[in-house]
Length: 508
Image (cartoon, rainbow, N blue to C red; front, side):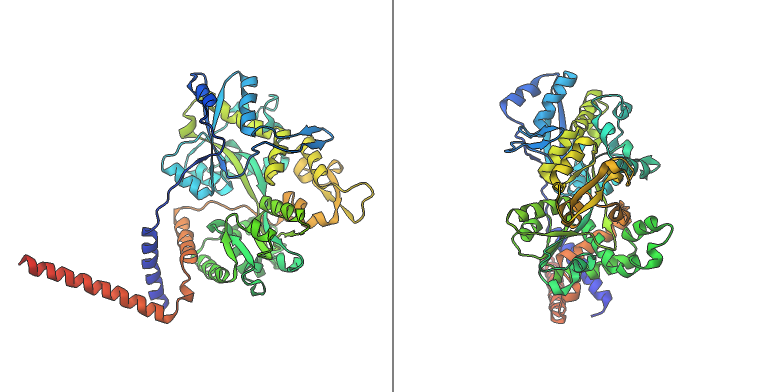
């Protein structure tokens, strides 16, 4: 069957599939904010209601059994960090705040909720969605007060990493910096978690592993279009990305970003073909199940965000099962999740804006940044002594320990890679385990690219590609199936025509 007719039939099937999809989106309140005490607070005319939407399992909910004992002091989460914020805000500003806390699963789900009319004051989208919301005018800019380093409570601007600060200042949309509308929360890279007993570091250090038939039905990949597309681009352009002429180009970073965000028709067709092959090779496309699948040994490798990679390695290690983390040679995705205020939520309310900025600052307080990092496994954008003490507590080698290496973290903490104050001595194995996932080296960062946001035409193209990949595989449909499908469609047309003519006869 010709490609023309396959494309035509794919459109018909897509329409039928889309017509049968009904999406029910609901926000989940994980802190049970409708108890009697909070209801009484909400009835107070002085109470500020702050509606916050974050990712699932992306904040400390408290109830810790043990404390973190650092040289700088003890850190422990007894209450949820949301409850602690409400108490802190009243002590600092003399105003009662009730946080209505909801969670969401994907950037696309969040965007759909906003376009359907859901209202929030503060949200935490990823970098490409931040860019999209900025471009479309959804976001409220931060106040000048928020950036004043002389204000003690401005923990974000006083403590954000120089690396993160420069990234948010230098990236712009329509001439405006990200930092005007977004404050970083967590950041990281993407890579491959793998079982070193089954997979070599060389095999895991390329995006091509997801289509490597040596590991058929033993690899997981992300079940969302942006992450899967990024991996596919890295694989199909591997030779180009690793060529000496490309790597040594003066404008390497700009060229890398352009290649990894390529949405040309030719590239999208190649991505679709590649991902359809991956679909046949992978154990599953997943959003959260890969962690358990790796820990239980169902799979030998999986495409992971760095924070999930840390969690997976930590949990496996409890059972003396050691997993490693590799960053693909071609490129890695440098991602950020950041707090943004919404215009239709803040609505020119100075009190609500101050509360939203206060929430960001409270989460940026160094001990609270550590609480969130320890609880969820991701890496806070906050630097400083307390955070560095936590990294030493977590990963530092014991005095006199053997097989250790120096791991420079100055690029993140002070902006100087050679800063001796941030030269951490760690077990050599941590260069390819949790530490390298949570704080990648500057060399890994050098080969990273940020996902860009796409315009309407580009989105339509990649979304149709994703429907083709996830709903069915055109290339695997046998000839007899095309014949049967054609006969069924022809039969339906004949029946419709006969009905039409019968009606005409009865009318006469």
